[in-house]
Amino acid sequence: MAATAAPTVATAAARQTEAAPAAPTRAVATATPENVATAPTPTELPGSWALAYAPVPWAVDCDDDIAWNGYRVPELGDACVPGLLTQRCLDATIVADFYGALSSYAPGVMEAMERRWGIPAGRGVALMSCRYVGATVWLRVPGVHTDWQGPYFVADCSAPAHRYVHLAVQGLAAEVGASTAAEWGIAAAGRVDVHMGPAPPGGAWHGVNLARWWAANRLEWEKGWLLAAGPGEETR
Image (cartoon, rainbow, N blue to C red; front, side, top):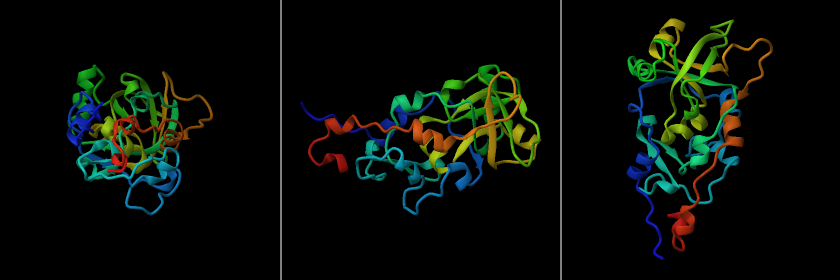
């Protein structure tokens, strides 16, 4: 049987794009050792620290128009993603209590998602998993809030093609709308605490670093294409 042709970046993007508006402009806090668990090893591949948990068995090439072994995300600084995430990784659950960096949407973007899902104006947030649209969450930015803020409701999520960059490179945990950012007086923060549940935590809170937890427990690369590749093609 002839080997299955590797998809182009365009087809991969189509496969890994949510039915949602184009990626909004975001204010993003710089990822720090605190919100990605460990300082990235100096390399040409941002977020490479996560590959210690889930190595790729191919030579990463984000510029050969074959998405299986790496592709670029122009809307996120042309970041190089070393492969395609499996559907199981994309659909996986995450923990209910976690922390990481916070960013905010451009005006009008979160508001559109709130209207789409019937979420009260100014109460929408985005998480890094698409399983939780409609879920209730509580947020707290250390140094800004002393108490949990909420309830907020998940109105959007990290697009599959962006997921690795959001977590491994930017260390994101959540994103808020422009109105919430204005209310809080910040466009981004190095850390936000997140609790998913109908009520805020009633006592001690023990959240995990989301990026580290995701890399250790959920990160998984699509490798089926290696079975279809001809001799030597796996490192193209």
